[in-house]
Amino acid sequence: MRKFTFKGGIHPFDGKDLSKDFETKTLEPDKLMVYPLSQHIGAPAKPVVAVGDQVLAGQLIAEAGGFISANIHASVSGTVKAIEARTLATGGKCNSIIIENDEQYTSVEFDAKDPATLSKEEIIERVKAAGVVGMGGAGFPTNVKLSPKDPSKIDTIIVNGAECEPYLTSDYRRLLEDGEEVVKGLKIILSLFDGAKGYIGIEDNKPEAIKHMQELTAGEDRIEVCPLKTKYPQGGERSMINAITGRTLNSSMLPADVGAIVDNVDTVYAVYKAVAEGRPLTERIVTITGDGVNNPGNYRVKLGTSFKKLIEVSGGIKGEPEKYISGGPMMGFAMYSIDVPIVKGSSSLLVFDHDDVADEETTACINCGRCVNGCPSRLLPQTLANLAERGDKEGFAKMHGLECVECGSCSYVCPAKRQLTQSIKSLRRQILADRRNKK
Figure (cartoon, rainbow, N blue to C red):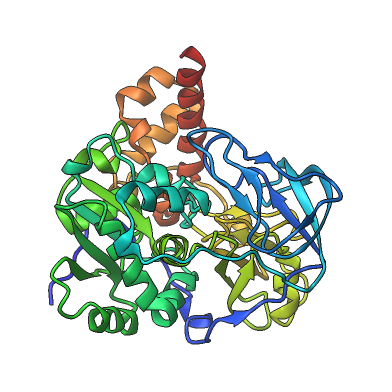
């Protein structure tokens, strides 16, 4: 069997055995639910409710604040108690709608439709109305992604089931438990692009998921399951497109520029729910795992529930963990508090009893080239890091530093323990900010 892959990449310890074999459980939500108005790339959503309003589960509580924005819906029924700034997992603050959960879960009526009876415009409008965004972490509004300038040039739709980040298993459980809905979601997306074929990319460390999806797609002439070599960052958009199609794109291009659209597994599932059942995005699967939590697993979580609640239902923590990470250990971020809400892009909570990175002592570069071999963008990370540390923006740009995808591979493999990615990321973002300010 052919296995698809890309050049470069690394092989970190995957840690998936901690949570992958446990069926997904449902998490009861908090009494007070917090809905940040920025759960996506683009403009914050605008509240359409006021303090004191009674709301139903599934009701629109904030509408998209612009073309690049997304609707937000209540995941419980109850009373709007406040609209105020609340802390996010990143440590920043964002205006949020606070709903007191009445624990009745009275829902709005959902407008189910047969997707085959809907026009392309109606399908995209239902995705938009449901507030579906990229749930792999990017948070890009899915209705915008499904509306490229020239739909006729799209010939490849990729369902990203690689889940290459260590420890994460939420997409794996979604494929095993809701694979039929994922396939239906992919068919809906394919109906928007007459000349496109669908590919479901899954790394080969998930053989059960590969087999299951192959069984579900048997006889589908427009869908192919692509086993991918297990390698980080296989799930990166550029890496995935290159592995499956052989096409390459750079930082100035969108996947649509090479005829492709890539959506996360959970996003495609949400598209099905939105279009066929009329259900807005109000919940997702979240992995909680690591050596600092008693019972790793996966949970269906209503958006607005706190990470603290997730820890409580998973048996609590062991001792005094040194590090909490939202997302994967490679591209996620450390959290200073767990009393923050789970949002659309919250794929996981990792709890570690020890912060190994903090113990590492940085030494001089030995010019071994491991960072170069591992870089999926084929850059010279050690050179870029040196330029970044000197603040040489011109030299950094000339050495193609903006092509960095900030995957962390170079830092991971560096025997000198240099924080290459952090240095590169810092200057890269400064340059991008400078360019935005000049517009």
